[in-house]
Length: 166
Image 1 (cartoon, rainbow, N blue to C red):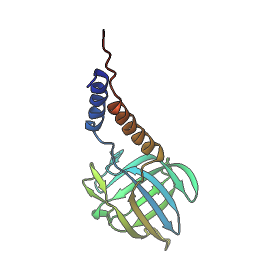
Image 2: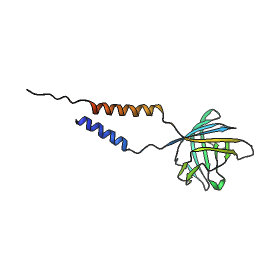
Image 3: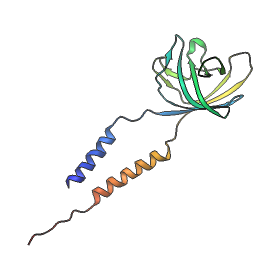
Image 4: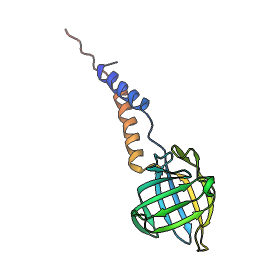
């Protein structure tokens, strides 16, 4: 095995041994309002209260408009559910009551996957369906992975040239 092949194998093994990226989940809200967000499955809360945690400055779409939002998630002490607020927290776009959408603690939550029925917490009688699902990797990630395997395989298969000295 040549030095180059050994180096390529070492880089490949080191890359495989590195810590995996955090899992990503998508939130899709349908019903009387629509929204979509992509978040880490185990986020680090911006603020933690006695019965809730907040994720500030999350980008996503609400009623088809892309923007930045603050998301609040509530534990069983407040009846579960979540809110979508504007960044100034003056306006609450959705205040949905329903099941607790995470496991773990408020300081270290992990979102639960599934489809959840929610109702409007305020005076409105809105109803929603929230689906939390694993995000599909982007095509660029797949292309990089396949190219890396291909280059590693090509480097390992390449023949060594043996030259005889007369």
